Length: 116
Length: 110
Image (cartoon, rainbow over all chains, first blue to last red):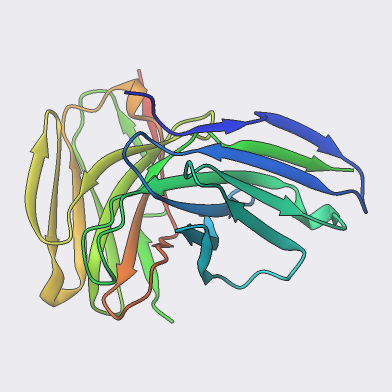
């Protein structure tokens, strides 16, 4: 049973560039969430995708956008990169359990983005 | 928004020692998970425990939802237990996002 996979593992960009990160969920999962983890901090929720739509968004600017494909995989796009966007980007997948239901998340290994 | 505080922030143990990590949250939750983040950044699922008690080998966890806290017990610690432990909660009010706690950084010495 394949777990959550992410690509690439590492990425170096310069300020102002754009980046796309990819995530494939665990088999049987239909919901993908993205998190940003700065050095020394806990992960911060960026947004969640379900049925190819953004279902909820955290406190991140519009430079952060995403997409979910019919096979449930997802992309995170960040435009106009800033130095402060340097972080570990984590993807989590889960099976939709309703607004008040069970929603156990499983995380991928992450993509470490460095912005110079 | 909900506040999720973990204690202690840092912990150093000798191999073989036991420890208790605490997670306090300020609102009612319907989902709670404990994770271990290894030095490479991978978040490893330890427990899904919105209420009650669970055990898995040397680890066990208890969540008292009515009193808004959860505990993670590590017994007979090993050097491979080193890393950062996070609790993450989802508020019981229709939101879909998990909020992570402040983390406990554990170092186990041989």
